[in-house]
Image 1 (tube, rainbow, N blue to C red):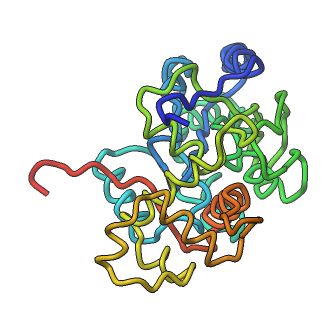
Image 2 (image 1 turned 180 degrees about the vertical axis):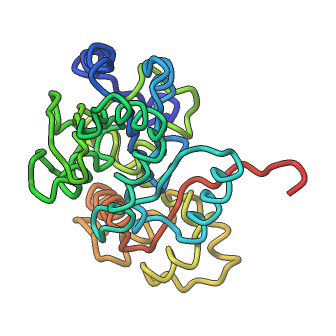
Length: 294
């Protein structure tokens, strides 16, 4: 599977773009939910152009799956850029309670004007957007303290808009997950596929898992080798191709078929599942760009 060919833009996503445009007039702010493991790859470049100058707050979800040291780097980076952002995790509840306050802070001038007009009780309305499977609906359910939005661990579950009343006088408009028609570079496509934003059913998951092996042996070799009990000398590991390392992991797990060959399908499914569930460890696939002078 040539990684530059990873693309996914089914018909309902074009409809979602229209829904965003049509419903912007009903909201005060846009909450863009991103994946803390791939902050920039999960940022839809079309959101700004679709936003019609509405304020946007970036919420980096799934923080419990990302490398905490890299999260700290991103916080410093976005702080220097003066971008409105918040790191959250719907599994642990980390950062969730801070979101309504952050929204009201961004909208403080507008809310003051409402108060002057005797409209202080008016709810704040926010549109929640993001890529598929990033946790938008789970975040909304956390804020609403009830299961109002449908949730499953696969992309493309939310297929229509839905209003949900949350705490602190905030109303949330849950929108279907949306990608953009063409990814600009192969790394973005790989990152979205690796983290589950693109349906596995349309991908060559074995080739994708080999890409994952290549990434992890470079970014987090200790975590990878420890998880799968790879104890070869470093010189021997350096001689292995990414595919050979992938096969070595399959053998370690006992995924052997007739003839002594490795079941690449089972190995791929296991590797992707364990990466996405942080069983290998807390892993980030992106770091902030290095600034000149740092």
